[in-house]
Amino acid sequence: MFLGRQDGWIEVVSGVMFSGKSEELLRRVRRALIAKKRVQVFKSHLDDRYGGVYRISSHDGSQLEAVPVNTSQQIARQVDPEAEVVAVDEAQFLDAGIVPLVNHLADQGVRVILAGTDMDFRGEPFGPIPHLLAVAERVDKLSAICVRCGDLATRNQRLIDGEPAPAEGPTIQIGGAESYEARCRSCHEVPARDRAQTELGVARELGAARE
Ligand code: ADP
Ligand code: ZN
Image (cartoon, rainbow, N blue to C red; front, side):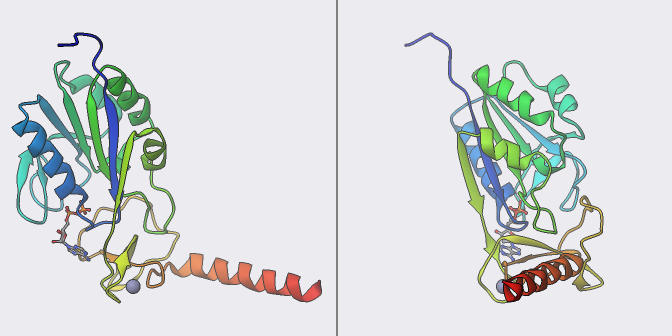
């Protein structure tokens, strides 16, 4: 057997809420366990929608013990030096330090699997995910089903009392099905941003009319 340095890599599972990122992360973790790999799972503990913060939970009810973390430093401190596979769920809530950390782990031969939503409720890039997508060897972008029209959903619709939430709200606001929906681009509504785009559209039209 070749005894040289073992190669590691980074995989990112991204996409809208309800697209099955946790299911996919769990599937990969389960298969790594079947392959008798030493696996460690971390989960940003800001999100405890579907059960205890010590478990990765999926909508299908399958669960796996995970280490709850708030920061990339907490992962760095608790990572098992013997781990062959390190998985991180809800990575969008973590700080920018997650990028050099997972690069370092991959350099050391670890297979790193990260799951996280790539856009916030406004449709803007979310936290460290864009950077992770750039440095990853493998990227999978999952979609859900738009609850409005049945097309493929790519956007996180935030709701307040059933109505689209305005763009000015905080980026991080934990919630489940009562405050978020999966929607497609055309059904996605962000009131203040839509207003800004309308103004931009009007300005463009005025500019074109003047030419
Ligand atoms: P994520 O981690 O991306 O939020 P999960 O793995 O927790 O997603 O859940 C995915 C599951 O959510 C699907 O298998 C499906 O059963 C359920 N689900 C609920 N709403 C939707 C939706 N609008 N589109 C697709 N799946 C949905
Ligand atoms: Zn739609």
